[in-house]
Image (cartoon, rainbow, N blue to C red; front, side):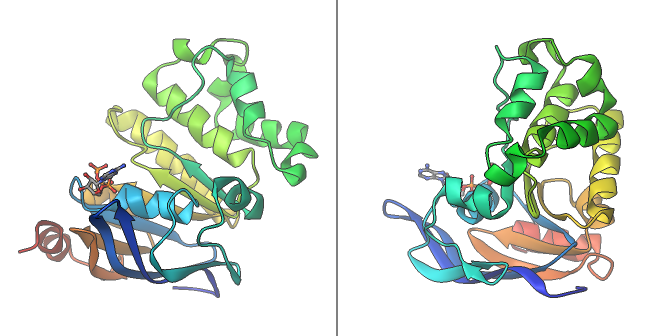
Length: 238
Ligand code: ATP
């Protein structure tokens, strides 16, 4: 890891009613890093992402973002502080145009002041969103919707971008082009956390990776130092 931590999670537990979904989870993310959270279905990856985004409150433990406690803050305040989530399944507003979906992302005061500049940046990143600006989002392909979901999240000018299963159901060529653009924004200093089921892609793309198993961190390390076999063993609890 390179520089000071932007996000520090210390021993959090998260419950859904009586169900214990995250167990004593700790992780530290450095500014500008790309971090992958890998794990099988039901391992707790989305729960972790939504907890960072303020949508679940940990029963124990703390979450610090840029030096401030954010656990229990709620999603609106998390966005205001610079955390944006690209949710699993994209969840673009289908009847609104591509342009209006992007505008909806700009709901922090800081972002509202820079709408035109940010739209231009997103159009440079994903030119198809400029071409399709006046089209209803429901008419976009899956890959274009994913680009729109990422663009909408970027409109809030985040410091930390959380991407939940962005490659789900997309063709390899589309996944490749989306990942390439994420690399571009990462080089500009954005910190990115990715949830992925594809171990190979996760390790290739990330600086650091955490493997989750049954709500716990089973393995972690620099992506270049983690072997695919070692990760797969942790992934399956072998
Ligand atoms: P997937 O890859 O399938 O999305 P995941 O690793 O993201 O899985 P989570 O969605 O975080 O896993 O789920 C972790 C556990 O918490 C699962 O056992 C799931 O059934 C449970 N869970 C998730 N959401 C809820 C909820 N709202 N109420 C009760 N249990 C839930």
